[in-house]
Image (cartoon, rainbow, N blue to C red; front, side, top):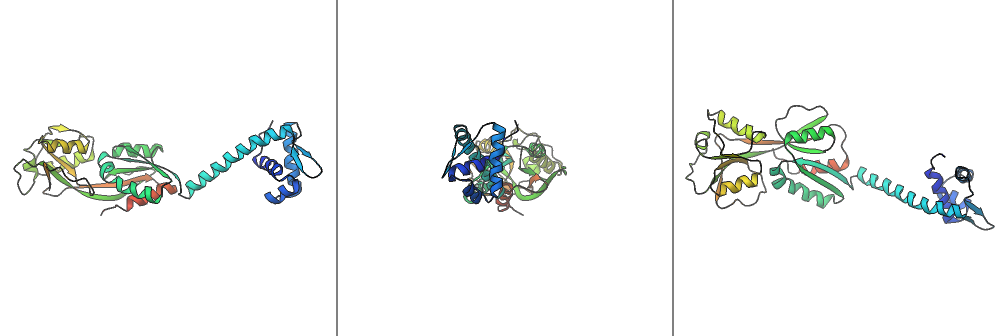
Length: 294
């Protein structure tokens, strides 16, 4: 037996609700012969009469009543699915999958997520902690919608990478240390260092900054969770070189943050798939653009 037609099922339910073929035709904006054809085709496919034509009203048969009961649920599910898709297309609902580093997640994204919750409460933003390369790979795979990535990045087919913001990189130092007015590579290279590991763009930027001054320091410890790094700095374990992110919590009183000489900046970009974006993704990009920094 061929699959049942949703239009025919809707016709059957409407006839049962209104009690006549003519009323169903008016309600559905269909010609009377079309209404009759829908019912005839359903009865032919099922091999049983579905409606009883009484003197003043059309009523379902036993088989028809059972089919109408199931048809109501099926049509309700279809209507709900169409409405859900329409809400996503219009940007009133949906899902955005976003990847970011722990630093960006802790101090930058909350501003954008707060705006999304206020302006687009029907959109679910799912956040994953990812390195830049992991984010780019998942964007290519189609399992991520937006990635916050360190710049510069080589061009990636099918993706667009846009500059987003540039944050100064500072020296975070134990307050108990005797600190010069100017924090140079030469001075920092003689101190115990707490750095991000070699897989990160920040590590490479930091080592390039030292190398430009002829220094090649060795880290006392390497890890990638910035809050843990700052805790170690506050405990006097060593110095760290980290971006200053606006909106961060108050600095621990046991440490100080000072600019580097020469200055060092951490540029970030927004990566997404090239081409037309879903409305939910556009809204998230807009919320991130609101905290863009030159």
